[in-house]
Image 1: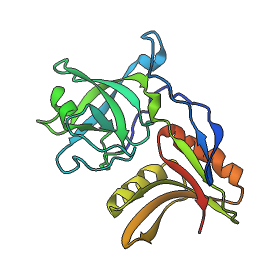
Image 2 (image 1 turned 90 degrees about the horizontal axis):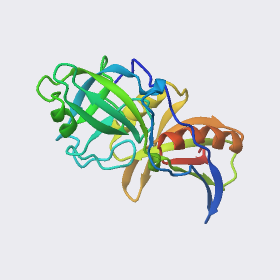
Image 3 (image 1 turned 60 degrees about the vertical axis):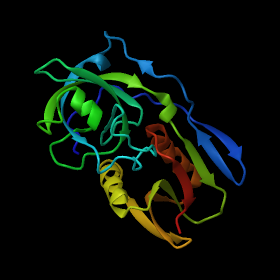
Image 4 (image 1 turned 135 degrees about the vertical axis):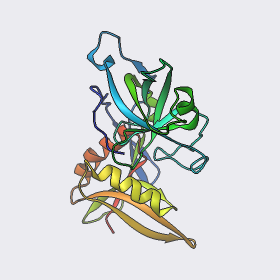
Length: 231
């Protein structure tokens, strides 16, 4: 999916450093969802092109790490932080629904949102398959903010890992999505106990602190982020 209009407000949350076992972790504070007052510019509506995804992805992992439920009220978007809450309405019928962004996609030109089956059905997207809908930013559920785990291994260079998949296509999709605004995204293929994993990683850093600083962005967006030696 290509994002055509960015929401006007994205909350930035601070992170603190804690020590845990053999790794350290930076945790973004978890708060309740924040509603945007109707008088705020962020509450203004914009239009996006929505499609939907269903049975082929049901019970599979999303980019946020949650299991996709086609009957939940969720959506996929290319860049909005996981946990972003959107109010969608069909301009033709007035039907509306509130969804939470939990995934990345769709990876089709000209589309901005992929809705879960139930959300799409609620506002009449299932029939036509693709529909221009009105979108209102309602805030964000901050429980989606994640920890940053930091390897304590010494290395000449470090990288930021944001996901690990057994399905190569999932890794390729995330690489394409994240790579639009973050140069240096690559996939590291590894074998563990006879299984192959595709790890999506970003950048190469000679300074661990600079890697941590950059990683905060991904943790705030909702990725399970790990600073690891760039082996």
